[in-house]
Amino acid sequence: MSKRVSESPEERAPLSRDRVLRGAVAVADKAGIGSLTMRSLAQELGVKPMSLYHHVANKDEILDGIVDLVFSEIELPSPDGDWRSEMHRRAISARRVLRCHPWAIGLMESRTTPGPATLRHHNAIIGTLRGAGLSVKMTAHAYALLDSYIYGFALQEAALPFKGPETVAEVAEPIAQQISADEYPHLVEMATELILQPGYDFGNEFEFGLGVILDALTRSIPDNRELPSFTPAG
Image (tube, rainbow, N blue to C red; front, side, top):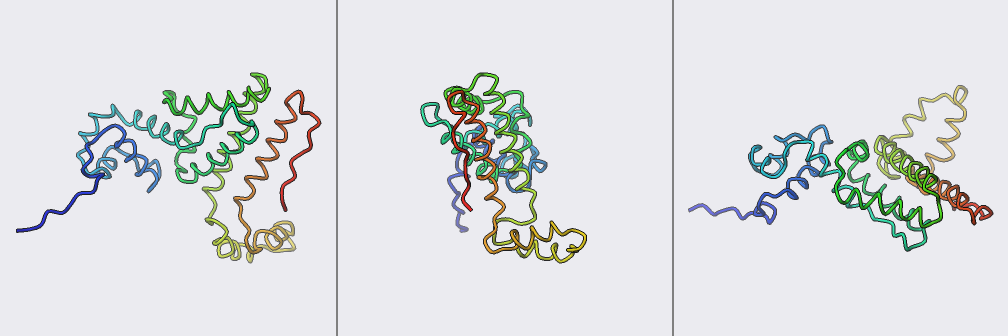
């Protein structure tokens, strides 16, 4: 008599909206948002495609749901804390989450049916910036500036041909060898004096830029115009 293969807890779990959405995130994480279809999702979950419709109405509902799941992974700033520390922590968290889910970068602000995690996220950021002393208008400017920077950096980072400092040299050296120092002296200087040096990590640029933005926002608060600027290490 053949032995029955034991099922994992995930396989034993009944299908639910939460399981469907987490399966959709898994599909997108593996092969990008373009790979997410009802068929590929059903295959990921080990069910028939029609069974998904008992839990989600259509693909749009899935997209709304997985965007909300991504927002739920980002640490919320606390309006009761030091606003700069809280916005710094939230920015670092958002970048980390987007590195895990790069497909989400283009979807985060595109959905018209925001879920509860998305609304909590936006409300917490607005509350933190307002609590810092920024006007409603300046809060809108600050929020747009911060998110443009975070999403833009995440998009650029996701597009790089190297992943982390360990692979920079093997990718950048062949490129640098094709560049003429006579024609492109500044590119060669940047490559040889910075990018190809041991330990170079493009990700370190994130903290520098974030500090510059937070400095500027600090000086926009009426009582903080004379505060010293952020001086990055190195």
